[in-house]
Length: 343
Image (cartoon, rainbow, N blue to C red; front, side, top):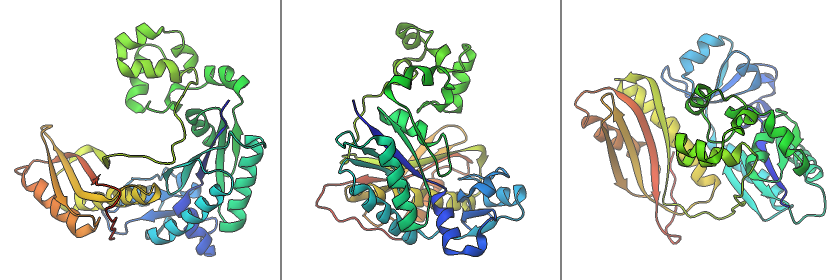
């Protein structure tokens, strides 16, 4: 039986800013762009009480929380702290799969200690060496571990033992399953499903006929099944981040600010996962009439200037049409290529 730990740092960027600026303790803090069109990268729990959240426009966050203290993004610092945390993980297992700078899966099945005891020790080490808190989930598979790590946030943990899986899943709301977003939740609600227990009432055939391949995945996930292994090496051809807007956007400057945030998110994930060398940069736009275009440029530097050129090119193809989706990404080359990053 596998033992998987999912470690998730608590409000990572904002927590680092509060740690480095003690005068911010107890105040609502956000990290992100300072311009009127900037967006939040993250917000601490004091700010979240007002409804502030990541990817929210700064002006909206300020409306919700006038006392919000906005700090500039310092990715160099965040990467350095992430490396500290990663080094702590390495003391306990080589099987570490980073998901971003602030979270990772650890396979500790080979350890004699219990997963719960290891998670407690790892979180204590993180706090002692970085001054930051982390939450953890311990379970027989990755899906359950990730769900559990969010259960007692901040600075807490939850273990889902193999014998507890059936009971835990029956009471779990379907939106907590990986891959079930707002759209998926609404689709399931249409057939009277709000909990995993209700979803378990449908046969595999019924779910497949209604939802296709996704239905087969739901059949397994609502029962707490996940056979994915913790992969400490990944080979992938591309990586991208997208944002769909609630209202179509006809302002190029606004799109540029959103693109900046997405570019930073892509850069963060590329660095966190030590991926292959970047071969080219990509910007995708989907317009109001659902037509779309992709602009691509060879090169390894993920610099703002290159992405601005790509955005301008993609925008010029729209003929003045407003934009409903913006995507930013990279394509990867071979292992021998150098990864260059510019901010």
